[in-house]
Image (tube, rainbow, N blue to C red):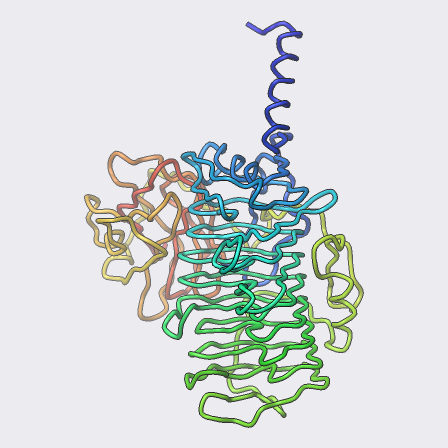
Length: 520
């Protein structure tokens, strides 16, 4: 029975009053995606869509951001959080809930997925409060400023990183942000944009990083080489001492960035890292590319860059500058398409597009800033690069040999007591589970193997836990199929050496008993 209008209005006013008190305003259930679409490596491994298709809420405090995360049905429910105003220690507290794990001294995006945080209205400033992404995937951060985050002194936050990522992080797009400090490590600051401990498929685009000792890193030590597939494009690095970025292992694509006043060193590729460095503009700087402060070399492929008033050190035991005449010492294959601006116009293009509150303008390679494409970032179901699963009856097992038997296996994480190998041992009584509700497991072969059909079998008693998934060719990052629920999926035959099942949504902890693969 419906309540009288007066009672319904009274209830609604009460809800709005509570929302205003906590800094969160509820909006319509269906969210618009972040403006434009992800670029670079964030488009791979199934793509990065953030909270597209979910609810939108407005937050004016850090506590409200945490409340929005904790108020979701589960940790994978899509949500877009529009942020306006200054977020700081005084208005950010820990919030508890089944769909979140937050902290009072940072914006904590931990063990969650499918979230967009976007600055709106008069702008969003995270003042002395960092953003921490841990064990999470499919996150978009757009049009925000993060400033003066300290690791020592008072107040401290996020280990001194403006934005930091660690521990099995996948598919992050950070776009049109301003990340800044007011000094180096001696003043209490650390990195502006750090990635470590198995962080992959990240793009930093159209952002300003300035006034810091350290721009950012990929890999926390020479042995932390599990990170990579990171794109940096159309960013401005200004008045940075070093690490623009520091690369340890992995692959990076660095194009159309403007570097000014790099005081000690710039792109530091070391410990086996490979970087494709395309059409950037370096000016008034020192040692903008090379291997520095280590005897473990890294590698680079260079083309189309401009070096304007750049000085170079003499080579030494732990110094290997790429200049004064930078030459490629490796090749890097890029799996996605991109449009290059000529390096000569990069300073002007980046000045017009990079940073928060710049209208989210982008470049299409014509050296002329463009307005963003408002189209949501959900994949076009008619796009031939994103095929839908074969309409095969999911209860009808494929015929032929299960190619997973005897293959290798690995993954993003595993729950205690489970093993990646359990998905290809032919025993439905054993299973693999991710450490959280989402994660990935792969089967792999020593030589190219043709696959066109997959059968995913859940462990007894957990049927129906898998809500959404992607099948990804690990070598190219191409999504072969997407679907919901376990069962059978088909796609055009492809020759590959590693096939990944990425669980992007689940009810509770999914349990995969068998990840079977077939040629037909």
